[in-house]
Length: 199
Image 1 (tube, rainbow, N blue to C red):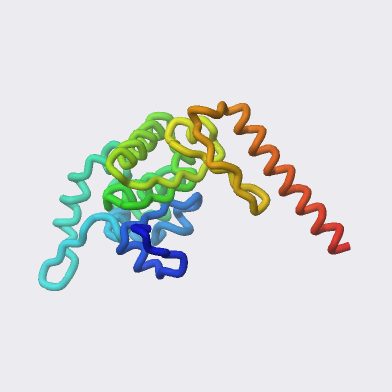
Image 2 (cartoon, rainbow, N blue to C red):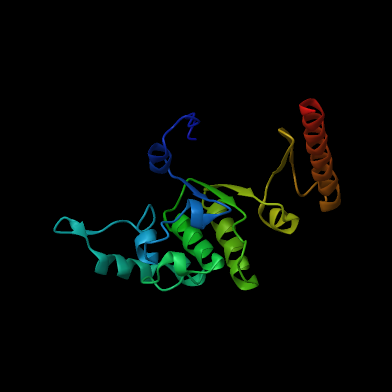
């Protein structure tokens, strides 16, 4: 990242360099379940404001209300406790927090999971806007429509092997599906070989 190998970099260092991640299970990986939405948004999201040494939550609330991404993604009320939210709403919180921090690199795994159609379109448009603004977006998904709508290049990962990269403008979905199936077949062969070796 920025010509720096971050393979062994700490999470703190990666965050400082502008890397953000939304995982396929944001309740487990991206948020603190017992925190409110606003408290979670303050973790590497909304820039912290302090007053007399403590976080100025009133000022943070005003910031929360000012972000267009928070409004358009339909993030729940700031005082809601995150563990009480639906999966889709937790996804909204995690994705919005990553976006408002203006990341240099955004890794998003299944970012549209659990969302309604309107919000899915907002997610897609947000990713395209970030990409146009210079953010490197690594999208992880099995939804071909999603991949073709957003991606400049597609890589298939299966059986410890990478296939590609492919240009979605030059490779139709049917052909890509065959490549994905080939990877699954290789993965199944590896599993069968491992089972036979164990016997």
